[in-house]
Image 1: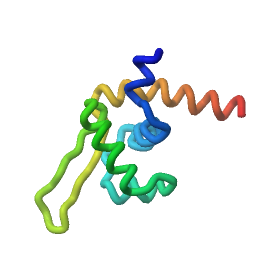
Image 2: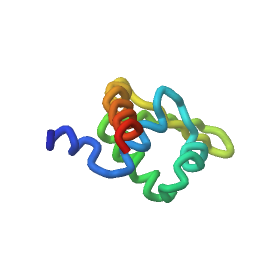
Image 3: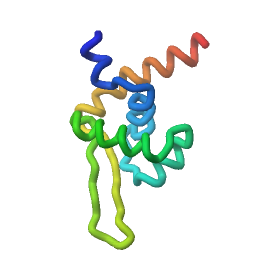
Length: 93
C-alpha cells in the first residue's frame, strides 16, 4: 500500500487524474476547472505525473503555443480506484 500511495504522493495528483478522466484537456482549461490549485503547482504536478508515465503531454507548434494533457493507459487504470473512493466519499460523508 505504501508503494502504491507513493505513485500519487500528493493531495493534488488524484484530483488531477480524476479531472482528466478520459478527456484530452488544454492546460488553461484544466487550470480553470481546478481553481483550488495554483497554476505553478498544477504545472509541477503534471510534470511529475508525466515523468511517472501517468499523463501524456502533447505540445503543438502553434502560435500561441498549445499544450494538451491526457492519461496514459497507466493513468486510465487508476480511474476505477479513484471513482470508487469518490463514490465512497459521497455515500459516507
